[in-house]
Length: 330
Ligand code: SF4
Image (cartoon, rainbow, N blue to C red; front, side, top):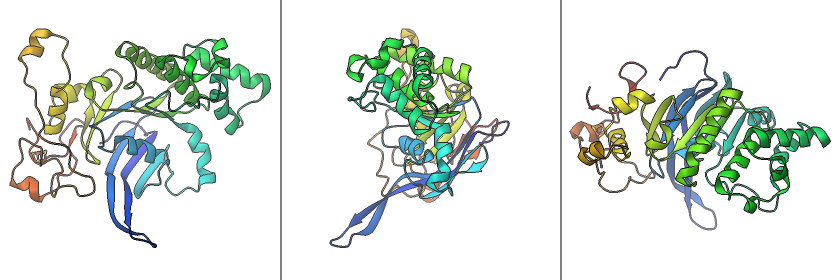
């Protein structure tokens, strides 16, 4: 779907298929896990795009493939108009600095043998961004930026709370002055009471530094607050994408409707009367997705056409894209 102005990041028909091999002594490919199977979107400078879907829908793989942590099977990733897919590793290094990641589990993503200062300093060292006093000053200012204290630099990850560890993860990502950060479920491992603090910090940093985020989450309640636009993923594809207000007020894909019906409403009267949409069964395997619409095996609105034709993501007006033959409310 189009957005105004030149995008900072553009993803075009991105595919990430993980090969399945069998046979000995010479293994051969017998299939593929189509974790991401033709995903396109763009992100403006300073914008947050939320990417939402159940576990296993491919959203984390989109983030990792975008940063070339996985080599894409097909498709393009453009940063500031430059096609990164064709670059050799050496030529990609300056772009790696501009595109960083914050991980879901702030404990597992921090080396327990390194102090907080060394964790942040490692990124500074890799990209030659300072040494000696300049390096330490930079570490202290990053700690301050994420709400930590200078004395925290000499402590180890186990000495921090979950929220503080995620702040260290954010400081590490910011150490190389990125413009774009993939936030892979950055708050889902945290206590509910801490989640809002981390989201507020990320919003403050976005305002101060002009950062763009791809904010990955498994439910819609987490992304509403922070995202200007939201893309909903199902089985390796985006099924709906639009601005967050429209998505919440007028969802058109049956899967989005089901996800939204699971978001708690903080009004007991409304919460008690509304209808939950319970999806039957688990998502199908990405090795053998269903024919036609991938959601048809769980869709309460499925018809014969859904079995035969794969619905494309088409714009239904006002930058609202839906991949469904029979969008709800159309
Ligand atoms: Fe449901 Fe058919 Fe739309 Fe797929 S195309 S979401 S099966 S109505």
